[in-house]
Image (tube, rainbow over all chains, first blue to last red; front, side, top):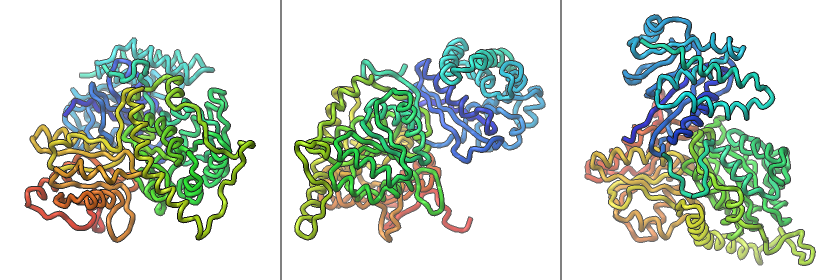
Length: 191
Length: 403
């Protein structure tokens, strides 16, 4: 099988899981890889558990199914930890969690090897830098660090381009978001 | 790195809806009339933004229903304008009456259609029931596997419709493609505009120097001939579709045909399918080939007009075929695509290939690589004589008892 990297984002409606996956797709294209980004399709309600997905490859991606066995799981809201079903997921999956707790506590909650777990306090970073608890951009920064294949400066350039389009009249939001990506990139920790 | 096919092409990430709206921006029709419906809403939302930003000169008519959307599009087309619309599911159903008017009046309306299940029960997810319901309405139907094809098909549809004088719809699978962001190569605006050319209708109602009647009554004396002309136009459209595909290939580099074959030349077992799941089938074919199993795929792109003379000939060497339909005609017989395929085999006098029918994915039901593996496994058993081909529709990933 042509090698694919699959990512699953878990968040709550309003935390920007879909925006993060879509922005991530733009960044991945900028390094010349094929990419998909798609949300889980369901009722959109603020606060309800939501998922979004990415696929990356050096070859055209023709697969159009949901992702059941991701290589990376990004958890935007630590209250979702208990509801994330890891049954059937391969043992080597790396899980990046937005939490103020440490690696061991989080690994215990997830019931996985601490070596698979990465933690970053993305909500604190978002509050400090954006002024709102919308942790999607810091979690994007954390994913970039863990996934290794992307250059953080390229990511920031690409993110800036997108954010400028989205927040034409709120430039202060753009700087905060970019700073939060870099901050989480630097702060994300593992074993 | 990703290779581009057209030297002036540019790679972008777009969802199916975004790319259909982008194609419409580049086509820049004279008139667009539409009414929003999930999952096609974004196409018109994005396009109406182009209109309000002055990016396109299109006259945008916000109507109060899909029936009116199709009526307004028909009226604009009859007046001599290049007219487009977009819809999905129940929206297409509400256009029903007017779909037949568009084709009967031989108006080259082009529609972006996002495939979605029909009520009841209410369901917003993908299957092909909506366009299958419209299959006998005299519209050309072009199905897309992914966003790139949706974009290329939209561009070609304009030329096909105008040359064939037949309304044409281009589909993507709801949510699976309409809301999935993928890498798409887009071409410069001028190059797209040059490819489609200006619309110069032979006759149109606003041509006051050559007035004519459109939409008059023809009873027993001429109705039959007019309907025959429509049927004939659909047959003649086959050449037009191939010609347009040829000039598209020459201009932009991507090859299109009635259908795409994948690992089919030496295949012994194959799946015939339309839409986004064909991509998933390709992945399974690759894996089976690595194991030495001679699996192949035929993906239908042009469903109407159906390439009945040709398709069986490309499949004659196979032992067993599964035709996978994403719609059920509840006919007590078989599903629509299967019946078309069987006709092709019968008229081609190829009667030694075993052909079975599966229905899958209604209302967005998951169709995974595992399901497709199972189907190929069954085909293999039938080919080896270990199982008999089943003589009724089989349903994929369906609860058959009260689970």
